[in-house]
Every structure is written in C-alpha cells, then in structure tokens.
Length: 106
Image (cartoon, rainbow, N blue to C red):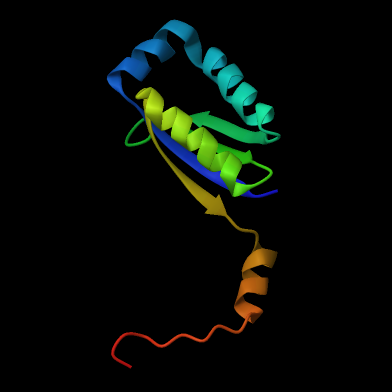
C-alpha cells in the first residue's frame, strides 16, 4: 500500500476546533477518514513550529490520498502537504530501471 507523510498547519479556525475537541478527537477523525477509504494510520504526532501535525498513513492508492487532501483543504481548517514515501527496495528498483533523459542544453 502506498505510504504518505502528511504535514499540516492549523488555521486560526482549525486551532479553535482543536482546542474545543482535543487531540484525541482529532485522532479519531483522522482514523475515521483514513480507514473509511481502506487505509491505516501508522503514526500521528502533534508538534509546534511551522507544522502542527504530522501523520504517516497508508492508502490503497494515490487517488485515495488525493481525495482526502482535497476534502481537508476545502475545509479551510488546515494547510496541508502530502509526500509519497518510498521504501529502500522501491528506490533500488527505480535505480535499476533504464531511463533515457537528455538534460537541457545537452
């Protein structure tokens, strides 16, 4: 299953909701949306600084991740970015593939 790192920053309205609902309530909401699309939450951490929340999730396909991303961004409560995570074995496989590429100006 494809794995993603989600980094998020709460907007002021989202932060108000977090204060009212608590971290446990947000974890339950994340679990619900991810499992509802056939995925799993591997880890979820709150932080302070540029990002307020970090999750590692598995989804059956990238389209499921895109669906969640669109819905969350549309809420206006969070600014998010998702990064596809690859295993060591996947990078080794990618390195073995032949790719024909000409750099600009070459």
